[in-house]
Image 1 (cartoon, rainbow, N blue to C red):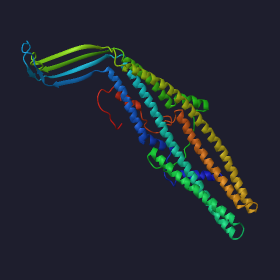
Image 2: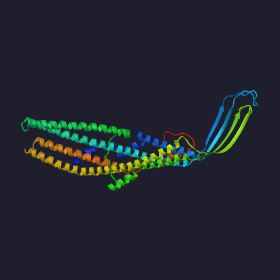
Image 3: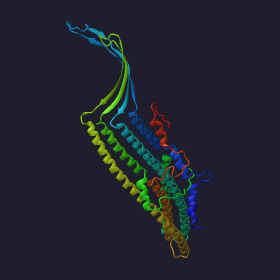
Image 4: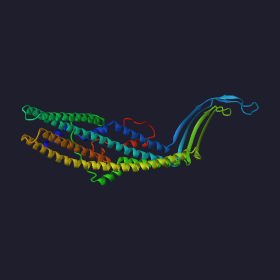
Length: 453
């Protein structure tokens, strides 16, 4: 019977009446589908997809229509055999087609760099999705903890109310002193302060929940979280340094920087284009006063000789950027390793704290009963009872906090090893597939975006 009170508090915090209980899974699904932050990240990735289409444009021809009209004034010497002075209105229309043949490997390397940028963007989107689900999970667990804390404080307040009333009655008949009355009142006011603080924390955590989920929490149900993988710290560290989305993104960022270096080196190589144009001109000069039609096909080679040193500067810049990305990758790996160790140890600490807190609750409950009996026998004071009740409350609060910390640590471990995703969690939701937009735009020759995607 004594152990059932904390369980009762949890049940009271989880449901009200017969209303539908909102699960953590439902909260995550709602956030995954509607959170504006993650929608913005998806739109950002769709923008990055366009870099591939732009890079593939290096294989495609460009077609331009050109037209012009103006005034031409000529003045020739009197003894010249050229036509006399005159005014003309030259006009022209034409179409030019340019087909790239070889651009120093810039197209191939540009597509490679764009692909790596897309893959890095996908990894960062996965990291953002994991962070969102982690934030939702933590907010959900925070609210459950706060509600349980409030129930504990309310129950303790009811007990202290009764205790204060009984102490006043006993004082009125001379069984206890004024000091006992004041001590009871002080403890009662202290628990009221704790209750107010817990209620304030609940409102704050509800606001956090609304930010991520988009709705007010209702009738929340305690989740059953389990950690299937990893099973040990070494496995957690290994997965974190290989599978963490931030690590994967940093790897692709380094690959992109290397490909960009090759693109910039390509600007130092010759460029070959096949150029064709057709045109029609009118009133160009006195020798051609009428219409003239023309058409030509050229194989044009451009050999860069010197461009103010900017080409070499861009190569040096990209080489330094690649070096920076390499160092960033190492730093991200070390960060992932540290987070894996921290979250794993937090999980072990929480589990140990649960065991010790439960033992403390059991011992304090027995101790409180003993103090009450000894007080009835006259060997214990009111203060002894108040102290025993306060110790029991503190033990129950610690137990609630430890269970909360264990659940949060499980989510954190999942996030650091890359398994806190909609797919890994098997959320009942239509997963966002970044590949769909990529496949749609990579070969798209014309048209605008559907911003409602």
